[in-house]
Amino acid sequence: MSDDAEARDKLVANERRKLSATYLNGLAVAVFAVGGFAPFISTVLASGGGAQSPLLVLAVMAVCWIVSGAIHSAARVSLKGLQP
Image 1 (cartoon, rainbow, N blue to C red):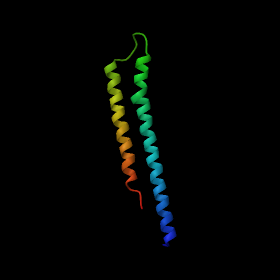
Image 2: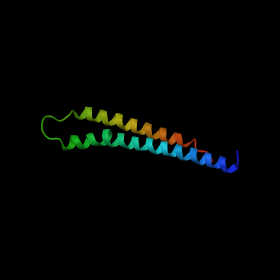
Image 3: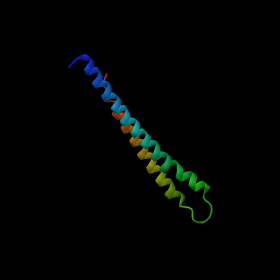
Image 4: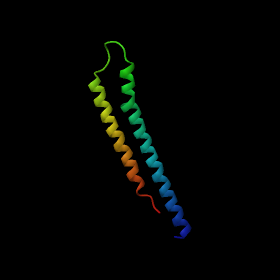
C-alpha cells in the first residue's frame, strides 16, 4: 500500500471516529436538555395541583445529568483512538 493510500485511510478513519463522537455528544446534549433541564422549567412554570413532586423531578434530572455525562465521556474516549 502506498503512503498516500495509508494517509487517506487514516484520514477517513479519523473522520469517521470524529463523526461518531459528534453524534454521541449531540445525544448527550439532547439527554441533558430534555431530561436534565426541561423538567426544571416545567416544574417552575407549572401551576395548579397537578404538578409533579419536586423530589421526583430532581431525581429524574440527576439521572439524566449522569447519563448525559457518561455519553459525553464515551465520546471523548472514542477520540483517543485517532491516528496520528
